[in-house]
Image (tube, rainbow, N blue to C red; front, side, top):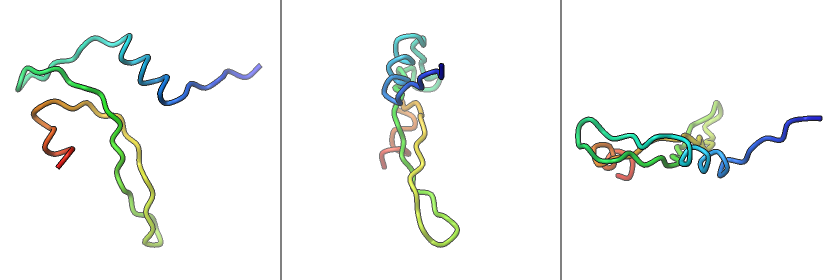
Length: 66
């Protein structure tokens, strides 16, 4: 019987339950995991979304959110 794959939301929920709270060494604030969706260009001048899970704190918040 095939193993059932977890959904993306289930993976995020599991990470928030099991992982320890990571603090930023520069600002000392807690890092929050988010889903970052970037636009990647393809071979024929098309674009597709790229989903990445990153952790945001006060140091890199301006770079991520603009």
